[in-house]
Amino acid sequence: MRLKQTEKYRNSNLIKPEVEWLADGVVTVDLFFPTDAETAEAAALVVGEKMQLKQVEVIHVEVLHPVEGTRIQIKGVFDEDIDLTKLKVVKKEATLSPEEILNYVKKNQLKIVAGTGGSDEHSVGMREILDIKHGGVEAYGFEYHYLGTSVPIEKFVDAAIETKANVILISLIISHDDVHYKNMKKLHDYAIEKGVRDQLIIIAGGTQVSSELAQKHGMNQGFSRGTKGIDVASFIVREHGKNDAS
Ligand code: B12
Image (cartoon, rainbow, N blue to C red; front, side, top):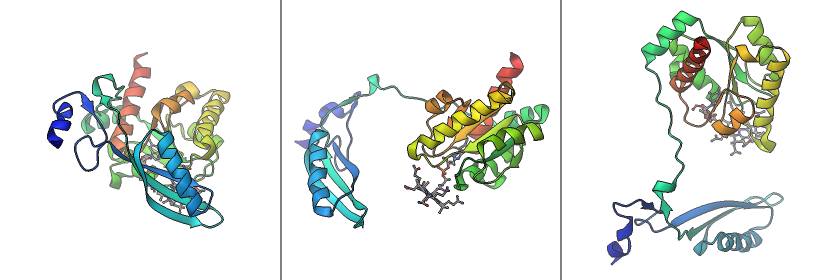
């Protein structure tokens, strides 16, 4: 009987979230309320109903700290079909081969300055993008100058001018109050002020960075979770190649 009920999801363009059975519609939602556990539980059920979830139930309650509040998880059934033909899917551009990148970088002497910007101390992601041991851009022949962590935004541009770098890589992990986008805009504006924006490829990365919004805030490109050195290296080569051709 269950197979019959879910017939329309087999070999079709329709999907639905699932946990246990094909297209059972089950989803979980993570919430935080600045209240005690009992109030948070009641409030979470209302959220589930207002999100039009069916069979809403609380599956996890965790008081983070009595003066802070409660983290809570609900589960419910999302009863709508998603039509695959109507989705706006953003496909990742294929990377260049390591040989193509190495040859281009050798011919064009591409230099990078990099660091984590503003008051951001999260350096792990930035190092993964840079270091040879993580398959970072260093593996593709790029010369880089690492400025460190919590680097003042203006310093990225000043250092690029000083070292004659063509690329700035800035890591912005903290996203409270959209500080990552504010810093991207600040970097872009400062490069204009210094008269070097056209000569620089400026790339921002971080867990909460959207490519679209990074570009809207003046970056040539933005990269997020799961980025590898080869993604960044391919982008730099393509972007630099465009300017070469123009
Ligand atoms: C480790 C860590 C720390 C360490 C950092 C140590 C270090 N030397 O890096 C310490 C303990 C110092 C720390 C401190 C803080 N942290 Co912290 N931290 C983390 C944690 C657990 C992991 C980050 C990490 O290393 N990820 C692994 C790397 C490989 O992933 P990634 O950073 O996303 O990088 C990838 C991509 O984003 C991208 N990328 C990243 N940078 C760049 C740059 C470029 C140019 C490109 C192309 C790509 C790129 O490529 C990378 C590889 O794929 C995260 C939670 C999480 N799971 O993400 C919280 C997290 C980032 N921290 C957080 C917070 C709030 C803080 C503090 C403010 C806490 C506090 N109240 O003090 C402080 C801030 C300190 C500061 N001034 O920056 C929040 C940020 C929330 C937000 N959205 O703003 C998080 C998300 C935790 C949370 N859920 O609340 N943290």
